[in-house]
Every structure is written in C-alpha cells, then in structure tokens.
Image (cartoon, rainbow, N blue to C red; front, side, top):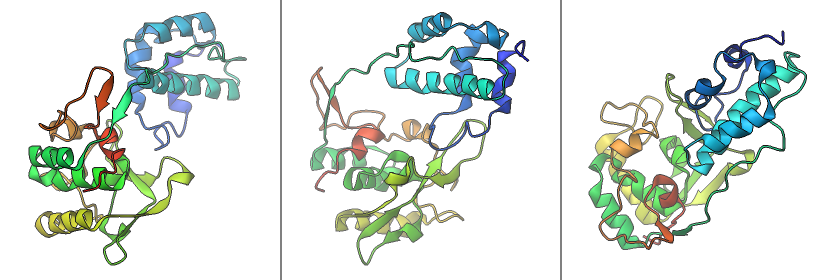
Length: 255
C-alpha cells in the first residue's frame, strides 16, 4: 500500500467538501499536484512539504487552507495504513498574515458602495454591513429565517459553493455560529423592497443572480460586491478599507 500514488488518495477521503473547510479540492490540486503529483505517497518527506509551503505565492490565509487539505490527505493515508507517518508535522511553518488594521465602513461609505453595485445586489451590501453576517451566511439566507415583526434573523445555515458542484445549503462554519441576531429596521426595509422586486428562488433564497440561481461567492467579484472601493472610501497603506464581503460584514455600520 505504501506505493500508492498520491493523487489517488483524495478519492478515498470523505468530507473534503464540507462547509467547515470553505475551499474546494480543486484549490488543493492546483497548487499541490505540480509538486507531488505522480509521487509515491510514502516517498514525500517533511522537508519537501516545507519547501512546497514556502514556495507558494499565495496569501497566508490561502496557504493555510491549501496546506490543511494536503495535511488531511496524509492523515487519511495514515488512518488507512497506507503510510506509517504523515510528513505534515508540527515542524511545518506556515506564513503569518500581516496584522493590517481593518477600517470599518462609515454609513455614507456603505451607501456609496450600495449605489455602485448592480441594483440586484444592493440589499446584499446593506445586509452585510448592517448585520455582520458572513458572506456565506448572507448568500444562504432564506426568507423563512427573517422575522420582520421581531426584527431578527436566524442564522443556522450558509451557502456552500464548490467548483464543479451545484451550490448547496449547509450548516454554519461552527456550531457556535448558530445564532439569532437583531437587525436594524433600515436593513429589513431594504430586504423587503428587494423581495418585492426580485422575489426568491424555489428554496426561498433571498439573493440570487439574474438567472435566479444561487450566487457563488466567486461571483461577488463580477457583480461588483467588494470588487472596488466605494467612492467615499479611502485608506492609508497601513490600513485596509472594509469593502470586500468579509470586511463589509465586519462593519456593522449604523445605517
């Protein structure tokens, strides 16, 4: 079994596409196959894994995700007794993300951004900024999770999009992420107007694309959510402007 081709191992692993991992197997393959593809899995050493990690020209957070998937493959190989030990040990040093300060968006910046994007996605911008939902949670929000009377949103699911697979609803990133949050009336008013104009899909998803299909997170760039700075948003070199979906959701701006 120790002579097993590294590329065959991922097919034996279940759960690589779970919501908790947040990235697709394609992300792992694109970056790992050029180095380890065709290698006998037992021949791969810790020093080689470290050299591969150090050579990845990716953001530190992306390196962590990609490495985590490769490490999962080796763990599964150990559990299946394909190899005795994993080369992905505690000795592997991952790059650290620079601690750039995130500058929350002011209300006028949120409004400027909402006016910049396609009108179909304006309510999404307002929701992200006004509720603090993660992008996947917002994209997976269905109308039955919104209580307009009590002005709350129940967060217990997220939309998971994996390359080559249809989008699906799954549990939140962690069990602790399940929550009911208060939402400002202005946000609910924008959502109500959005629903009146665009409706929902068959699953009740509030946010869909022009074909009424679920919105993939990668498509947020093409639809203009978080792609560019809003006109009113400026930041210094030592700060980052909160206009990406993640930074927008960290704003919780007083709209």
